[in-house]
Image 1 (tube, one colour):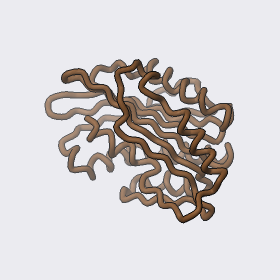
Image 2: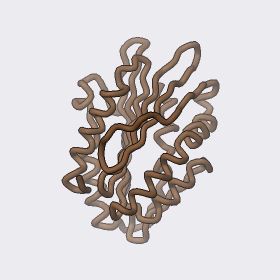
Image 3: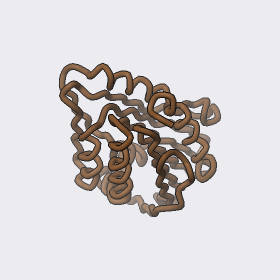
Image 4: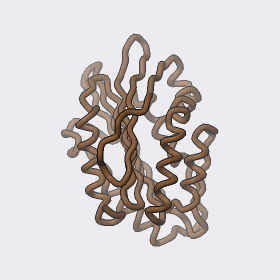
Length: 219
């Protein structure tokens, strides 16, 4: 199942290209965002991390190289004031059941800069996800359904998506939350065959993440 999630996670902040010389303030943002990420203990103790990346802008800025054209609009907006990106994938496997959390935090220079980034991500998310899945040979035959859903009252602004993925006679639920808090944009995607990571549990996980981001990036 991780082969399905990885292309989706990489849609935002993928292929970050850095010039020499990391900006010191951006490095502090990166480190603070890293400490905010959800861990195995936050999710019940049955998960393990399968991927983790972190980037801070150089003094020359930050540039995103993405081979998926449908994701380009969000990448372009983020480049204008992007400071740092951190992300990880956590997976739990129990027999034929699997649960995956994909999380990403994008940091920009100011709260006003975060708003258009969130808008661009929301506006392109479904086409971006579909294009990413279509591009990956490991996801051939996946039937994806993904639609906007009511967003919880969380952070400064929030958007939510819900759906499912069908494959090989099976299916899995997908829930996505995207929240702006101050100058941070937090992205959580729960992908699981049990449905237990959806709804209130996904919202609770986002509350945990936002609580850790608030001291540095704004309530």
